[in-house]
Amino acid sequence: MTSVSTQMLLVLISLLLVLPVVEAVEAGDAIALLLGVVLSITGICACLGVYARKRNGQM
Image (tube, rainbow, N blue to C red; front, side, top):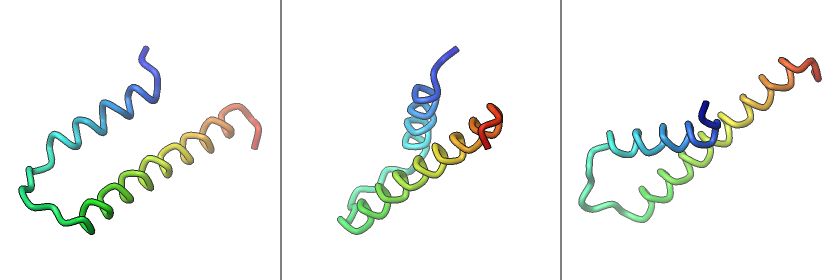
């Protein structure tokens, strides 16, 4: 069984391959995209942490 970080990396790579190729990306668009990706991954990890704590009976 693969680890969670490996699975998240595979999902991120597959999403990036599905996105259409943009020839002229402005700096604001790139920053917004990176910020969105970072916040999404942080949110997913936070939800997984809450789920794991509930499952172990710590909450």
